[in-house]
Amino acid sequence: MIQVHFRGVDITDSISINDCYHDMYCEGRSDTLHIRFNDPQNQWDVWQPKVGDEISVSYGSIGTGKMFVDSTAAENGLYTIVAASIPPSAKEGKSKAWQKIFLTQIGKEIAGNHGLSFQSYGVMDVQYAYILQTNETDFSFFQRICTLEGCAFLIYDGTLVLYAQSYLEGIPPVKTITITSDGDYSFVDHSARLYGSCRIERGLYQGNFHVDNGGTRQYVPDMDIPITISSQAEADRYAKNLLRSVNKGMLYGYFYGRVMPEFAAASTANIENDRATSWNGHVFFTHIRNDYGKGRSKVFFRKPLDGY
Image (cartoon, rainbow, N blue to C red; front, side):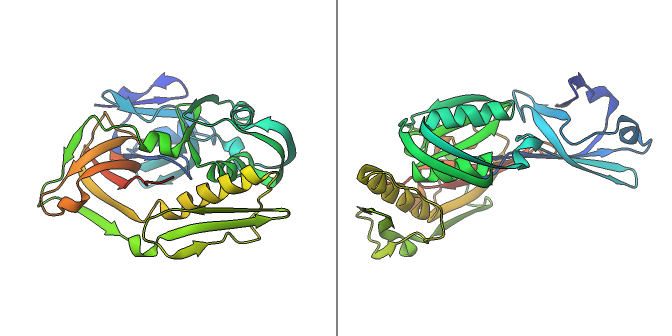
């Protein structure tokens, strides 16, 4: 059922797979593929995979999409490839002054710099007077901006996908997943750690945002974090989105189940569990590990936030 393409060629009939799993993330890091081959004849030493070579795995109707070899390891009779959805060029630090440019324009330019296409969903396309990128990789720089805007991005099959977090989190689930009482799951509630407000001050501007979530603490971002504020509207918007960022992971969990082709990271679903009914309802998938060798998945999720 597992098919492998390497350097654009279907090599499925020429290999023996020992282990294969694929991690999909909704933000913060690239998707990764770990695949180990039985290699008693040292075939992979002949093929000599190189960093940046394209590899993809499909499992029925789903798969990794285009990935790039990041590292390899040869063992006694085994050969392991680790690949990422982000190209090797993403590791290069850059410096640039961005002026009078929109958020989606930055995303399109960064995607193009690394041979990726670009899509966006639910994004409020704001314009910036001036932003400085100083010896940062393109993607760490873009991640910093996205956090200020309540956005995130992922990279899948050669496409950089930018999305507003509230937009994707708010998509009504179309399927309910039943977590059995004897299943392997964990639900974690850190709501006592919630921040109730955020204050940000840079230069002439001070932004504030408060949400009625029971939290009494105020979040004030460290002055070492590079944030340029050009207007009061930006200051207030950044305060709101920074508060969302520090609060969004307070209600989270995971469960195991079969591989579900209909779901990916940044999907929504309803969950039901008879032993923890307070957790039943709408969740947002943050990370899915599909173990194609075993035909099972570990699904990580968080509860969507209200009031942002």
